[in-house]
Image 1: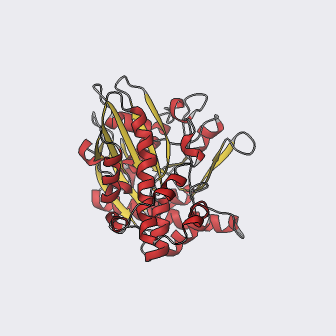
Image 2: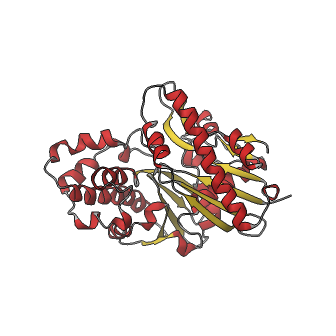
Image 3: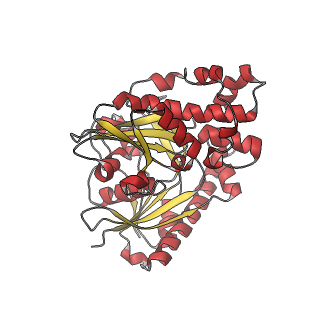
Length: 369
C-alpha cells in the first residue's frame, strides 16, 4: 500500500496555499515536492470577510468553500505533475480548509471550530481520498482543537538531548515545547502575521511587509506596545488557542485610539515587536534544557521579525526550521499529510497534553476517492 500523502494548508495569514508531497515509507518523513499558490484577490477578500458576521454568509461560505477546493485541486495537480506520480499512487490528501471561526468551549460549553472547504468536491476533482475536518473531534472531546502540529513536530524535530522549541508564525503564532524526555506541550501564543499584514495592506496596498523592511523604518511606540501586551489572552495558562476572532482589525483599532498621531511605519514596527514579544514571553517560559527556537511559517521569512525574536530570546538560537531539515514553508502542510495518515491508520492525531481534550482521538472525516 502506498505511503505517499499530500498535505494542504491555507492558514490564518490568508496568503495562499502550501502543498507538499510527503513520503512516509522510510525511517524519516521525506518531503519530495512542494508547491504553493496565492489566493485570487476576490477569494482572499471573501475568506477574510467571512471571519466576521455578514449578510447571507451561509450561501457565501458554501461558494467560498467550493472555490477553495478548486484552488486546492490546482495545487494537487501541480504536485502530481512535478512528481510524475498518478493520482492512484497517493493514499490520501490531508486538507485543512480555511478557518473562519474558532470558538472552542464557548457559548454552550463545547463551542466550535469552523474550516471552510468542500472535501467531497476536492475528492471528485483529484480522484484521491481526502481527509478533512481535522479539528472538530478534538473540540467535541473537550479540547481546543488547536494546535494540532506539536505531535508532528515531536516526530520531526524532537531530540533526546535537549528540549526543542518550535514556533509556527502564520496568522497566529503557536509554540511547541518538545521535551528531551518525550513530553510535548503546545499552545497559541498570540498574533503572528495577521495584524502586521492587515496594517501593511491598509497603508501600503501590499498584502504583507516583505522581510519586515517597512517595519524596520519605524520606531517602536513603548506605550502602544505595553497596551497591546496587556491583552488578557496572553496571560492565560494553556491549554489555549485563539484566532482572528480576537486578534482582528477591530481589536487593533480600539488599542490605536490613544495613538492617533502615530505614523503608520511606527505602528508597523510596534506590531512586529508585539508579535516577537508575545512569542518570546512563551518561549522564555521553557528555557530549561532549551538551546534552539526553530521558526516555521511565513514569519520565518520576515528578517526584521526574526531579528526582534532573537533580541527578545537572547539565550536561544533563533533559526528557521530549514536548519533542522524541513523548510519553514513546508512544515504545516507536512503536518496535515501526517494527520491524514494517522486518520487512515486509525491512530490518534491530537495530544491531550496540548489541546486539553479528555483523551487521544482519531481526527478527521474521510471522503473516499
